Amino acid sequence: MPVVVLFIIFVLLLVIAVPVSITLGITSVLPSICDPSFTVGAKYLIRAMFGGLDSFPLLAVPMFVLSGIIMAKGGISKKLFDVFAYFLGKFTAGMPCAVIVTCLFYGAISGSAPATVAAVGSMTIPILTNLGYDLTFSTAIVAVAGGLGVIIPPSIPFIMYGMASGASVSDLFLAGIIPGLLIGGLLMIYAVFYCKKNGEDKERIREVVGELHKKGFLAVLKESFLALLSPVIILGCIYTGVASPTEAAVISVFYALIIFGVGYVMSPADIESSLSGSGLVTADAMAKAFNSSVMSKVLIVGGMCGIITSWNSFLIGGSRAMYSMAESYMIPRPFSKLHKKHKTPVNALLLIGGLSVAAPFLGRKMLVWIVDAGNFGCCLAYCMVAASFIILRTKAPEMARPYKVKHYKIVGAIAVLMSGFMVVMYMIPGSGSTLVVQEWAMVGGWSILGVVFCIGCKLKYKEKFASHIDVEVEELNTEPDAVTTTESTGNCPFRKSGKRRDTGNRLFLLPAGQYCIWFR
Image (tube, rainbow, N blue to C red):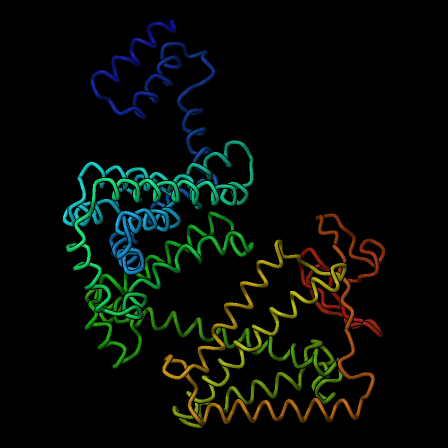
């Protein structure tokens, strides 16, 4: 088929308003229909289309769009605007600046400029016009500030560019933060200049901001806290290495569904009633959304399965922590005893498992005290581990590690601050997390027991107390034809099944993965 004829058909299809995607498909298939020897046929085009869609990074695009749509339906943009208007509303151009900051935050949720303009503009443009601002100015502010959604991470165009060029999406996201903030700052400067030149209706603005101040800072923050936390979760997962951009997009969708389910499906009265009743707000929201108690029970069963897996994780992690402390002569040595066959810390497992099984028989009130005191201990332990992580990475950078976290100072500082904040919340009266007298007594009892172990073991074992356990890491040969012998894997004898093996003076921990880790 001549190229000129093909081009004319393409233009005609566009003129008669055939969708662009269908037009491209028709003009791509026509040459193979007219000439069977043409190499690019319909089958090839279908394979190419599905091959283009079969992309893990590309999955982030619809996920971020879906997250933005769900949050828009859940009223996230209004909650974000309220908290920024609370702080900025009383200043010159405070309300337009609040709109700009809202666009920045919403862009960090949706990653899409059109989604940001639609969600924020549909809510803020009427507010600005009612406050006396010019419609043209209000629309322009939202349109330009909403366009920052393509610069502020997570940005959908950044994802597409990274997929096409092979550039790191995380690095692109990191590069977009400062330009996005600079553009947002320049927009605020222009808004201040415009409002000083054209004036504002201060009385109307005071009325709106005054209603927010009547609610109180804590009430406004409580309504918008989950919305403010969403960019932190999305970007935090990406930059700390916890999740890839695509995985972070899926996390944002689940997070948005939780906010939508509880905040949009249930009214404040329903939430308060659920809290004073079953306390399972998400389950009650599920029942109301589907008008069936069956869905509530499904969610409860899922939660119970999550509790069992968490209990299993704590059982494994706690027993290994006790084993490591016993190996370092910090608690009595019997807790370092290993099972002859499975090489697991049997005494530590029996103690933790026995206490966990016996605890529910002490009654609900006692169980609540134990759980609350244990939660405080976990938060304190997280804080201490995060601080130790920073200290070890600084003082012993060459220590063998199976995995090294990038930007450890930033990651460690965030971990210390967040876990330290949770520890402080347990101590502040009236915070809702404050421990009662009985729970503080449990915390004090465990602390005294720790001091007794520390002094006793230090006196008994002397220089062995808190001795360092060397960890060696060796990369395994995991090729299909690898020979599982000592020679093929250096000094690490193992089996493909990933079993543990005791070889004299070393305990080999052999996961069926890429690394072999053992303790001296």
